[in-house]
Structures are given as structure tokens and as C-alpha cells.
Length: 293
Image (cartoon, rainbow, N blue to C red; front, side, top):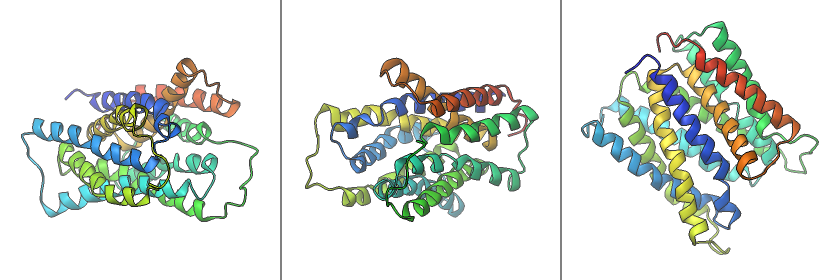
């Protein structure tokens, strides 16, 4: 594997997630519930998982440590997504998503303290710019809480921690098990939570089962799933404190550009600042020497 494999996989993830982000909301806008979008996403995780496992010779790590790490990674990712469904119904999305976007901070801190990862001054500046950019993509100024209470804030912090921990453990697990095995357990845990998503779905309301519903969801969510697979490889060959902020800041950057170019959505001033910061962060993190991952 080449010296810059981690960067290549991170950039591929960024592209997949950036394109996915531009169209991810379309199915729900056409009357297909977000909980059912989760079901579709979990199903789209299966083909890449089986493909990756087949390429590795169907060697699935089944020792206790691998099963624990795989289950932990899968549950923190999928569980965070399930909790997000509840959070957006109890609080303001314009504050929830900026908070959740800071999950790379958790990954960075854990990587510095536990994995002893280090970076150059270029990487440090890139990380700082990425962390500053992330909340700006979804933050809407001048809006109050509207009587939402504080439960949404607790949920947001839990999701932030879960996704930050998940990214860290993906990197940690890559030291003792195959990337293909990690992704297989991620897919398995995602599928295991499908009954929860179905239970959270209000089937009494009209649901769009046409092409703009589950089929459009599948077309967009496969990009999400492929991005998750390449993310596992990015963590395998790259530094967690570089991969996490790069993918989390780079993907919204591509989403914003596509939304402007294809959908005619003009970003507000804060989002423009976020785009500029994310571009600078992506550029610095891309040229930051990888060293030993």
C-alpha cells in the first residue's frame, strides 16, 4: 500500500459523503420518513460489507476482542444515528447539527492521548480550521430555542461523543483486526437496529413508497455506505487526527458547492466562512506529511 493511501481513502470518503450530503434530504422531503431511510441505509451497508469480506477471502475475525470492538464501533455509529432521529424531534436542528459536527474533537483528543499520534504545524493548523468550520455549515444565527427545553442538548452531546469514540475505535481496531472485519460488524450492527427504526416509524402517516422514496434513498445511501467503507481503510492507513477532521470538514464543503452549483442554494454568510475554512483545512491536511500512522 502506498505511503499516501490513508489520504487517498480519506479523499474518496470525502467525495462520497459530499455528494451524498447534497441529495440525502430529498427522500424525506418527498414523504419518506427518516427512520425508513435508516432501514434503507442499513440494507445498503450489506453489499459493500460482503464484497469487502469476499476480497479478504471471507476471513472474519471472531475472537472476543474483535467481536467486542466491531460491535462497539457498529453500535456507536448506528446508535448515534437512531438517537439523532429522536433529538431532531425534541430540539432545534440548527443547534443540534453544529454540536454533533464537533465529534472529531473527541477523536483528536483520544488519538493524541491514547494512540500518541502527532502532526506537523501544517496539520495542526488544518485541524484547527476544520474544527472551526464544522459548526458553521449548519448553524443559523438569530434564532432562539423556541421552548425546546434542554433534552436535545443532552442527546446532541451523547451523539457527539458516540461518533467521536466510534472514529477513534475504528483506528484502534485496525491495529488488531482487518478493515473488512470492522466494516462487516458495522453493517451487522446497523441491520440489527432495523427493528428499532421500524418501531419508531409512524406508519399511520402517508408514506411515499415510489421512486422518490425508498429507491431515491437507496441511490443516495449507497454513497453513504461506500464512504463508510473507505473511511475504515482511511483510518487503517492514515492518522485518526488527520482523517477525522479532513472527512468531516471536506464532505460538507463538497455538499455546499454541489448545492450551490446544481440546486441553486445560496449559502448564508456563516456558511461561506465555513466553506473557506474547510477549504483551507482540507488543503493543509492533504499536504500534511503522514509519517507513521
